[in-house]
Length: 426
Image 1 (cartoon, rainbow, N blue to C red):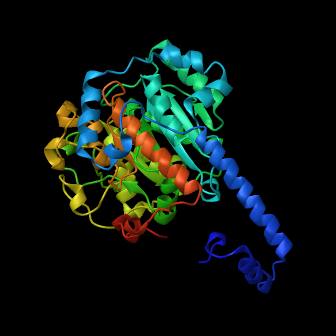
Image 2: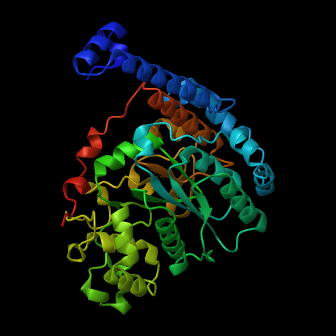
Image 3: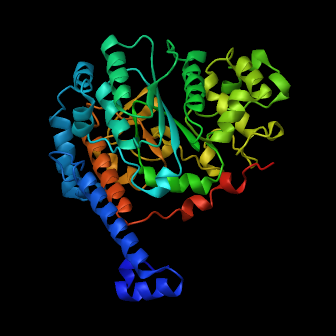
């Protein structure tokens, strides 16, 4: 395809005139596009992201010297705590808050504007880390439901409310749940936010659920390109449960409508049509009521409703599933990247928490920046400060270049994913 910058303006005018467009109209449109690009370039330059004290370009590219220096800095120079009260204070004046924290309050490209996304963010601590993530994923055309654990500190809750008041499209969940591990209260905030998002906007196309300790690996432009390629397909983790998983619900069988219960992660990327199915289909509601009485229902709810073909779930998967582990032998799962060291085969240069889940450090950045996944988990703001900083700087640079037409994004890998090829259609 020919672009204005590929040929002289005189030749381009002649081509457009031959096609029926008057030269004066072409000149006006060309000038208007140039003015728009100049405005966006100024807008982005004022919000440039730079991680202090580290060569992030070298870190992303895997340069040994840059990685060694960054790792030393991350280990020896701990970040000054940014208390929830600081975020509450800063968000008291929205204009200065948006400027200081570098929020991108422009849709940037027509591609992004035409494909809004919806997010739930479940958080319970570290307002600064939540804001850091929100700044990176925020666009005004998107919708964001923030659920704060009901037992979180008052200053944290107040800070999240203040931040939400500063950003169009961001709002607090209509109901706050006291979340306790292992019970329905882990899943319930997702249901609350999906309903709130459904009521908030009729235009968003896909729903992604997050926690406050995750971070994007893709720009908003890249996410939109990927999800357009999905074309209604869902990316939901799922596998055939073994005996240990089945003990969580075996005493309650059979499940309603004789659905087969599958296991999987709670983090999902699903179409608006699938959210409609979850919220309003009678069978889906019956299953929700049933699974609320099981142990850890967040790890069977989405997968079960996505993989039972007889339920006709929009964007569901009709291909084969694996026994645990590992699911990835048959069907990739790209919604979330986690490094479970026992099964991933990838080392953990950071440190590990429960059941050997790796907390990412700056040494993980070269690996993270090449993964096809949409988001990564888990980061701690005080420990992963430079990792987050370098990922954010790289994402901003890609955003700038994509907005200004200097680079595009290749979706060929995503076009061939099994859950696109084996998407249920009715």
